[in-house]
Image 1: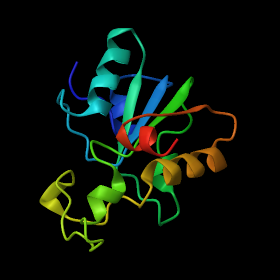
Image 2 (image 1 turned 180 degrees about the horizontal axis):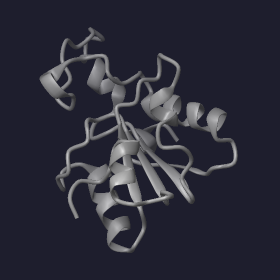
Image 3 (image 1 turned 180 degrees about the vertical axis):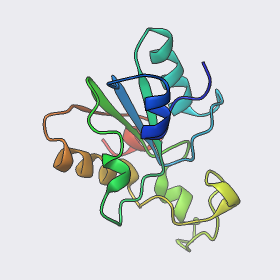
Length: 143
């Protein structure tokens, strides 16, 4: 199979009428084993689950990125990405970084501070009955 789907159009092209697991990441979606969301997605896919990815959802607008695929059958998986969002945003001197190595074009500002917490709160407001599983470096630091 090609890339894991990231849009409703890609899900429809696969002929899926439901998604088992939706993974949300603070990073851009890169299908490579150095990115945890890609690894988890591919492992779940190999076990027969239908997996989609929502990369860098916009948390500041009408939350359409969180709604575009609907609710998964099993759970949402949430990660801030390959790097803690606070380390990604601030230098050791607490100065704002001007770039983000995990965003296309290196542009900053595409993930919130404490991304796992922000994404999880939004998901629990939109889909209160769907489990949210958190993971990655930020989740382990902020438990």
